[in-house]
Image (cartoon, rainbow, N blue to C red; front, side, top):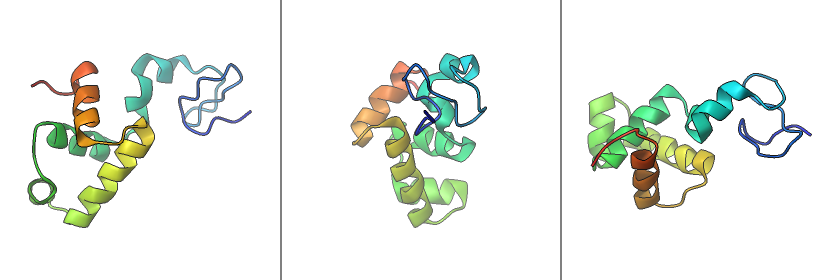
Length: 97
């Protein structure tokens, strides 16, 4: 079975990033490994309380692009609110309060 994401938990999962079964590299980092560098940056700024227009200005990108990154982050992490993103980021050590 091919994993639907890089961190599928089934015993026959194949890592979508490295094409290896039970990829230890990805398991060490958890779901945050599935995020791109830009998505991690947007996540950090979101969880520090920045709003989309401020993030867009800081990163020199469109507000719509920030929203796309936010939706992709939520989908990849299986979270549905910015509060859940913040809790996740603090728990994973990606940001502090």
